[in-house]
Image (cartoon, rainbow, N blue to C red; front, side, top):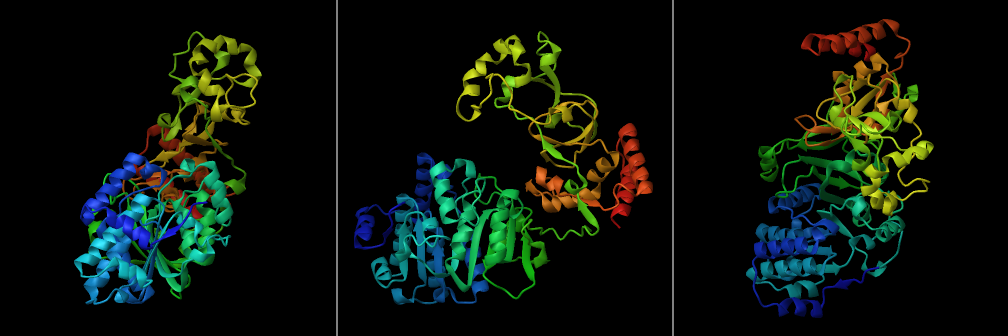
Length: 560
């Protein structure tokens, strides 16, 4: 548990001891540089929010909370160098003449690093000094509060820890840290599970917990306004968070910034989300900034919002595409009994995966034809692209034949997370469905710009980075490569970049398992024959506008 410090005379004295004057930009730059040098940019998810985006978020929050900026109580749970507190105070000074510190807005912030904590105070001090005001008096008035420590420990979901420091606010605003779950150490995950049991997920990224924290801080008519990765809207591991938001917070406005580089060189699909505890509005305001010109429209306040039905924001995923997809009279691919399987994931890929012909001296029984994601051809894959050194527990009496090949990777295979109960250190991880791969099946890559479902006639083993469906049903293949499926997956899947414009879809297993199939998929013989013939024509003669149009016509008939 971290110690917490509020602003007091000793803190202000320590800040004042540094007599070197630095401008706002210099303080921010120094903070970012220190974060990179110390590794905090990765461990604590430090990125600098552009001032224009900060001001837009403040203005959006003012609009939604329905109060003047100076009448609003603000809280930033991860202040960094203090951009949000600074701009809140600056905008209040710009709005009206301020003669006394007590006329300034109530601003509270928390920062986990001492470097950022003092950077925030220095920025506020300089801003006030330039306006003839004093930070000491601002603190003494009780209208400026700052905590040094972990914000997630304040107002936690399931704990009265640090209750003397509990905060309430009209607006919780900020840029929560972008730290992936695999960068969180075991002890910290245990703490998160204790503090936020309702949304905890071992695969959930750190920023998600700030939404739950914020819901405990805002008043009934307050709002939360965060800029964060967009992934929580669709990915499976964020379903507990979406369930929590469905109960406690309602989205009012969503600005999708796509992968526009609003954080300089950092390429990340980000979104501004403004939420409230309750609303009577049946629609969510939505704007998608496809390019830098659209981002400038956001900054300049020239945004024309679409109205998205609130039913599109569900626990299963937030579908904001306004796609008109008919899923009535359907049931999922999984409910039809089809299984979606992950590809083989060797503990050390280069120890087991080789180019074809590279292992000619080994007996064929120790090799398996293999196909990787790059080798998958849309519609039909006739040839394997790699060879898998097929060392399993069942053939370990032959492992000595390949020992010289695998020996350089022995240490990696027997230590750390690769350590298992295998009797032979050379054995691949156990897999219950190797035999299913020795058949014709439908395969597809995890990441692709367009749909690339393929009939695997090579009966190859599928590698990690690709998936397979345990059937060679040509009708299913046709449906999955149709325009109907493309519209569906663009609406449902997470993506790298804008899925509507050159972005790549993340075709995760659960999205395909939940794909809606017509109820009469197996029994409507005439449509099945038409789709099957259309697919055969494409495989034999190649894809063309004409045969694709024919396929899409028959697929659409299935969903009417």
